[in-house]
Length: 285
Image 1: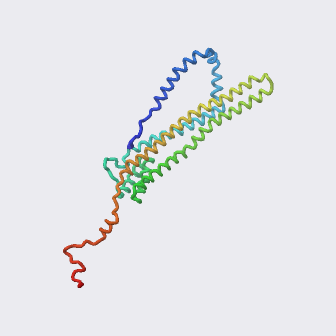
Image 2: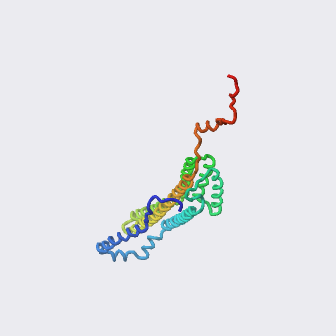
Image 3: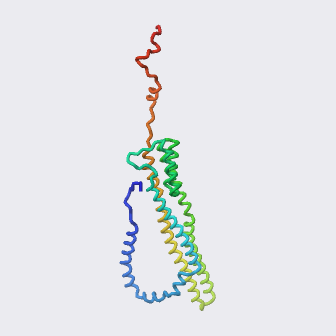
């Protein structure tokens, strides 16, 4: 990639598999030993019961929100992977000892624009283009570093803003589930007040109410997991772009040392030659 890693990569997937296996190895045998009515409970979950749990107006609406959010998240994951390909492009000189002068700023900027127009827009290319434009004007590496930092903050803010729809869907899924819960509770109370013979129908409404909450919370957990995973990948992408610019742009800028006052005065003072007579020679005292 063009950037130096500062820590070891943590593989969270194998750790998740190890955790699930360890918990299942301990809890499943205990569950089998301490639950004598397991066969009765399994028989109660018939096909009709599963249909009531999974198929309802609120559940179907939650499925629409969940699938919509997953489509958006999948597209964003693909975009992050595409953005990571920019580190393999020859955007900046990466040879050992390479230096970037002020007169190199505009040619490098045109080169970055040509690559970005051919391969598609990249966060890294835009960050380099803005930094090179600043260096061509200011000639100061400190200003270039501040420009890279400011552009990284802009890119991060843009990523946060474009996730507003997914954030709304992650909030809407449990809200729809709670709406179904309130509807079921209201129906059970209305039926229960009509007489004791309606208790069975009241229980059915209560079951529907809690089923909506159960499905909504399960879908919300999945959406929030993938949402946070995507946000982590996008933040890591911006940090990698910033580090790439620091290593291959800011640290390679060559700034000629300015002359101090004594050197400037010496440069402006005329040099006397022993072969040229001084202006004071031949002047009578």
